Image (tube, rainbow, N blue to C red):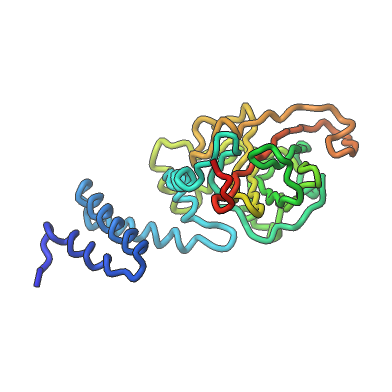
Length: 293
């Protein structure tokens, strides 16, 4: 029988976890053991530090709920979320790049017709986002669902507002027969990630900026194509080059052009100055259909 020593512990633990019934689970758990042990050895982890880490993870779980996922936020600020996105979505150069989901997505956003104002009375500068959803070959894609969500003009999501308990600044739009879409909303503000939880407490002990540049989230899922989770960032926004979750990409930075009151992109008339952003989303064909480059 091999008794445990500092020298053989990692090998013993790896062998135990290699007995996982799934080969993939065995690969994941043995690698996790190997890298965790290497980390502890490299930094000479103390018992007090181990306890603090366990308490931090426990607090992260306790603050998470159906509207706030603190573990996703932790993954985001550590760069892990973006790394996983990069590893799993190596799209063709012409396809719209993916980025992080973020901690504020919820299922069940209300469906919205073309040009519907999803701000629904929330104050802010009117903003229209228009464009097309295309296949990689440039073919317009009809009836594509665009799940859209964003922060308000103060940089807050509804889960951060005690007096709001319903979907806010969220909607699911569909493209028309020619692949066009029209989102009406208000201009979002760049914002700080939630600093009232364990992730914020950790960030507060560093020199890391805890702000995100102004952006709108999109989740586009269409049969025959890879699901696209991405953002559109407002050109000129502060923090584009220091996004705390490493989400900014050049291809996703777009102009919000200014327009006077009058005719709007959806055919309506707006009685105040408004902004207009134009962007064509290009979807990557699913690998299963044999068309991926």
